[in-house]
Length: 221
Image 1: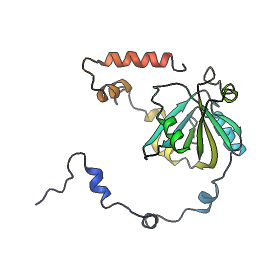
Image 2 (image 1 turned 135 degrees about the vertical axis):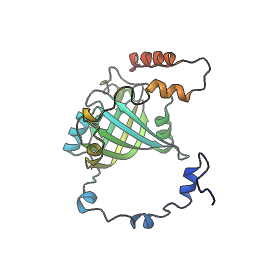
Image 3 (image 1 turned 120 degrees about the vertical axis):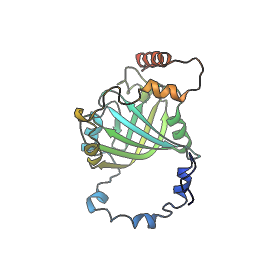
Image 4 (image 1 turned 90 degrees about the vertical axis):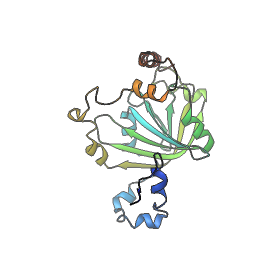
């Protein structure tokens, strides 16, 4: 009997060979969306969506580069740190992090971004997709001081779609229910994951933890 188990690291290739290959084939797997799901996608920020953004302290930014490389990164700040400039335009201040600039590079290359706004403790989730650019216009940056000082740049999104997701993902995950939270030692820490990814002889977990503490101390610089 032949072992059909894919070689180590080749599971994707094995599954991709027989994957769904057309939107028509994909649609055959699911029922048609309901009328509400189709109609609640709009092309601007209405008052209710503006209120969600004004109370959100966490937004996930998705982008893709010219060669198809994808990135999703979290951005956080005080509630309302993302500015609604008008009903078609949002601005996310940059709080300098690891300086890789993955998201910024992608946006410069393709001019597109997708956002998911989250309010901790609430199941409300707002998706915004549209054109995007990186702005260093001082007149804009002077308005974006929620993270402590004008940022070096900002992600500006021209809204093409605003869509309120149903709350099922948060309800299923129990993300905001303390009783569902793992014990502190039940999963690798940020420092432990970082150390496992680095091939740097002599580097210790304490070295990584110290770097993380310093990064958090100066997180807005």
